[in-house]
Amino acid sequence: MRIVEPAASSLLASRRFLPLFASQALGAVNDNLFKNALVILVVYHAAHGGPELVAAAGGLFMLPYILLSAIAGQVADGYNRARMLVLTKWLELGLMILGAVGFLTGSFWVLFTVLFGLGVQATFVGPLKYGILPNHLAENELVRGNGLIEAGTFGGILAGTIAGGILIGLAHGPLIVAATAILIGVAGLMTAAQIPPAEIAEPGLRINWNSIRQSWLMVRGARANRVVWLSILGLSWFWAFGAIFLAEFPVLAQHDFGANNQVITLMLACFVVGIGGGSLLTARLLHGDISARLVPRAALGLSVFTIIFVAATYNVTPATGWHDVGSLLAASPGDMALAALMATALCGGLYSVPLYVLIQEFSAASHRSRMVAANNIMNAFFMVIGSAAIAGLAAIHLTAPQILLLAALINLAVAWFVRRLTLDQ
Image (cartoon, one colour):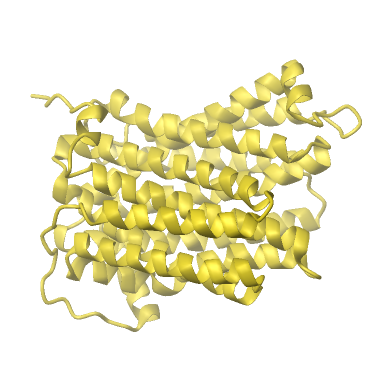
């Protein structure tokens, strides 16, 4: 008999979920507030090497996922996850205070150190938050809970990105950004302190500090579990696909549309709202079932709507293009492009949430966070490959629409691949 799934409002009103939800959403706001403020500061105020520094910023934030995910997974399985989440929030607050020093002194060395530290903090938060969800949620609540977590995360990404861009441009912008980041850090710490304690997955676990060897062991352990491994591969491709999409937004806007930053922000907003909407819709469509049945159809939707998006934008040039939000909305292809973009992202939410739940459900309880860490390692690996592929394709003069079209065609093969998950259930 199917158990009726709790409504989102009941979870958000519950202490076993709301503090975790609020804490991770505030963390996403802070990460992206800081990152976008730093990027804009670099672009407009760096004496030289602005583009190179921006690229380095993205790499610095991702580097800890490769270096430290194995250790983060062990910590999450070997210690009280609720207590460790509080410690990560203390780290975030300390980094924001150091970031304030960097902003007020204009020291890029300090700011880039903080950015790396935020990457370290985010690396440890992932296995903790996904590992603790099954501790506090019933099985029929996992899809809803994961959907809310994803929606909150992407909502935080959008809010932080927009706020960082606006605040850093104000008079005394660095001071305002620094004060805002510290206040958000305090709020995140206060909410994390309310997360209920969680049972330790493997008491007495001895941490193996050899991150390279441990990473290999975790990935090998994940490969031994068919459902978990296929889910990890599916998610890793999703993050690579998303990285390609987000990397091409500025190129499309500036080189193909001749557009200003407001168009990039609108496109990002549509993408994030679509991801959040798809994440929430997943629970309604699955009715609380833990199942991969939506994933192949969502993967197909990713390709179809990406192709529609490319078709809507393909003939736009800077001479006839969407220079600002008004001209974009006034053109019928512009409306189609935004709708297709949001639909693509909505399919992304429908695709990713069930895969996260499958990793949680089919991992051994004692190794759940380590399987999440293995997923993070593979995600980072795929994103690096995706970034290298973009650079290579750009070097042979493929345009942004052509790169997106190629990604959509490759994704059709992925849609066929992820069908294997439904055969295992």
